[in-house]
Length: 238
Length: 238
DNA sequence: GAATATCAGAGATCATACAAGTTGAAGTAA
DNA sequence: TTACTTCAACTTGTATGATCTCTGATATTC
Image (cartoon, rainbow over the protein chains, first blue to last red):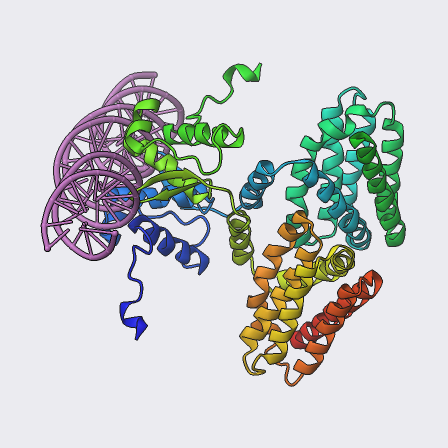
């Protein structure tokens, strides 16, 4: 009997309904990437709503990266970029950034990255290898005092290892984590001096193992590298 | 010299500037979670913009989960929920869903989940254990023909294992993957009959290993379980 | 005191107008 | 013809004012 008086509620606003409709169309590939949407005025007529309501729906869709709005020319269905999808994760991490998070990140890396290195050793292409090699060279050339750049290069290296697995899911899982590393740098590398040679050597060892398709070796080298990071961090915390 | 004639571009629209301003305030904790924002009209005066521009900025912020808008009462800074942050990742996966993605997901799970199980065995609390136990019970009770519910329960079990690690980053990394599993079910479990007993037994074994804090055992059981999934999937593809 | 009615303030929607960027076709000069 | 200019007809962006609906607090009624 209860159903009779079930919720009618203002379930969602008009603009939300519009948003859903368009989102669904995109999800179901009824609107393909690159498609130009009808103009605002046309959509208003089609949905029979005001421009205000319609535009707010469009603003939300563009905020989420589903469509791109170009002033003066029109609106287009855009390919949802990984970066867009990860953006909000980054924000989330950003807002909950604390020392707890740092150690949790290291723990995750300690567990996942060696496995990733192993798979990368099996699947890497020559292009992957070239990219990794470039990272190593950049790292060696880099000004030892420029810890910012050093950290950036190292992050790129690790991300490239993930890419070398050829597994998209792997990349997406790790990317938000790597994007946080630059912030950790200030804490971690602050008290470390003159260890750059060691860092270069360690990363070169990872590279070589991947190059030679030595999965087990890649696993070990990566594990060792992260253990070292963990050590430095623990030391710093004291 | 090129910089002289570098882009001037329409840097950003007015509503985007407003969005940034408010976002920055939230990021820098100048606006704390739960804070009620000034009303639309007030904000218009403060920023010296029209309600149109302001509202579009607010729509974007709410679409991203940074603020919550309650009709009739006001706008509030909201705690960015993990679910919101993961939403767009889900969408991304959704749009790029194909058989390639399925095998990549299984590969990732095969690598990550046993490690997760090992850590869970070390860190699990009694509450975690209770939740896992409930999942097992539900799975056993579940109607064997209701593959939908069965898959849901299994997913919850795996997510609860991730939660038992006590590592937030671990959960965030795995959650989007689990959320895709229901879609895979249709493909994977479609051709499997009368194996429910085995499934229950396998998951109970994982549970018991975690309960007894047998990390290595948990690792093995989880690996075995996913190997089996992989097998079924491979078999189905033929 | 409790149920009801009223009302002010909030966001939601609408309609209209104008500003400003983009595009392409028509027009013009060489 | 060819290259360039101009301009008109689009597009989205911003502004304004009116109205609708929901919410929560206050006032009223019994």
